Image 1 (tube, rainbow, N blue to C red):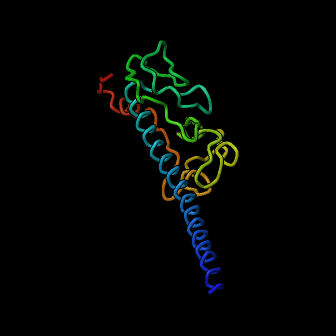
Image 2: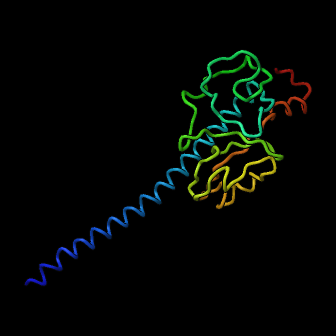
Image 3: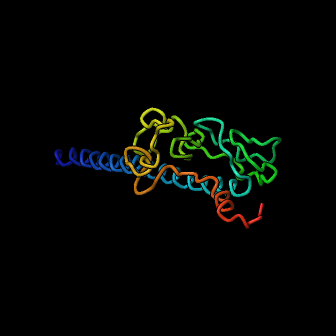
Length: 185
C-alpha cells in the first residue's frame, strides 16, 4: 500500500509536466502563427492605402532608401511632402488614412526602395515568425531581391503568406499616357 501512495504523486506530477510542455509548445507555435497573420494582414492593408494615395495624389517617391510608415494618421499638411513621401497633388490628400500608424513588435513598418521598385516590409529589428530579424538576418538594401524574398521561407514568407508587398506606383499616370484622349486629372 505504501508503494502505491508514492506512485500516485509521481504519476500526477508527470502528467502535469507533460501537459505543461504541450501547452508551452502550442503557445510558442500559435504566437508565431499570430504574428505572421498580423504582419501579412497589415502589409496588405498598407498596400491598399498607398495604392489609394497614389491614385488620388500621385506618389512621386520617397526621401530615403528605407522610409518609416508613421504618417498615415496625418489629417493635413503644408507643401508636397508628408513624412518621407513626395506627392504631385498634395491638395488631394484624404487623410487620416488610419487612426494610428500600425506597428509590429513596437516597430514601424517601412517602405523600402530597391532596384526592382518599392516594397512594404516590417521595420528594422522586427523578429519574424521564422526567427529571422529584419536588418540583421534579412538585409533590405538597394540590391535586395524582395520579390524573391516574398516567397522564401527563410526570408519574408511564412506559412503560404508573404510578409511584404510590392507597391506599384504610377499605374494611373501610365494609363493616361497610353490614352492621351483621357483628359481626367
